[in-house]
Image 1 (cartoon, rainbow, N blue to C red):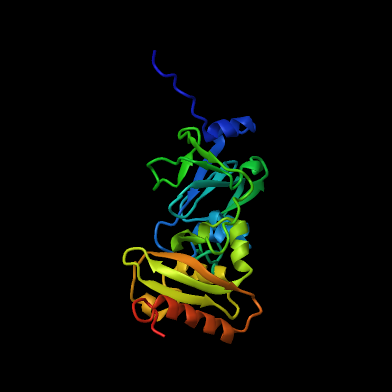
Image 2: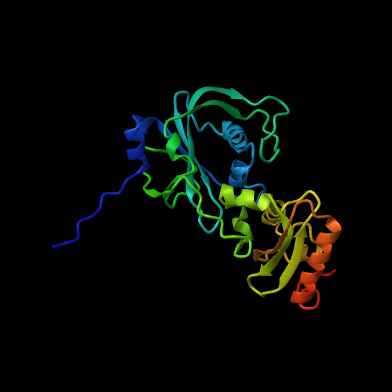
Amino acid sequence: MGRQELDVITFNDILRSEGIDPTAVRLVRHQDTARREPTIYAAWRSPNGRHLVEEYQRIQARNVFRVGDVVASFVVTPRPRSETLFIGIYRVIAIGKCEPGARDPIYGDDVAGMNRYDLTYESSLERYQERLSIEWGAGTRAWVQGAARRPKPIRALADREDPPFPGFSQFCLDVDQVPGLYASWQQRLREVKGIYVLVDKDTGAQYVGSAKGEESLLARFMAYAQTEHGGNVELRRRKGARYQIGVLEIVNLALPDRRIEEIEAGWKRKLLTREFGLNRN
């Protein structure tokens, strides 16, 4: 007796359960095709993220939507998860053109004369936002697809609550994963300054740095994720290096910079990062 095949639940099943006809739905998958900063996902997770991504989605060089279309929007999360994450449902109510001087809201590119779609947000499927991810399939270059012709299997449906923060002493992850951190974890890193270590994943070379002044640990970590070097002269020379980042010590936001620099220097001595690592001062 052969094994019975399990039915695969698709995004179209979710649409139908909410009374939405998949034949009217356009699936939109936002992913950066070049290394540009911030990533669309990082923009989404910023304080004004929904507005930024909605404005970005409205501006298109090609005719991709029609009045009356329902748009199901997804963003791709950072590696290694690389999930196609659902962020909302929109309806196209009008089409116009971008005015002279108009700029891309995320990257600042000149978009004058491009199509500008008037999209209105709809609360249907709201309970699935940032929880549901789909398998997009091999055709990642086709970032707009008709839902009815491309049933997308549900990959995951996550709990609404973030997993517990592991604690600063245990916190450690690849730099390119920082923009995809859970919101509650980002908040913990935003609340403190401190000393951190970058470790080259290919050579093991270490760099000790600190978050001070107006910057929190999260701000420093995001700077490395966005630039690869965080403004450091030595790291600029190591283009393409892959780093893991960890917290060595946290300090109160009110601690003077002079004291933070002393603590940082102590860690450089302990880890010999001036002699054998990537620190040059």
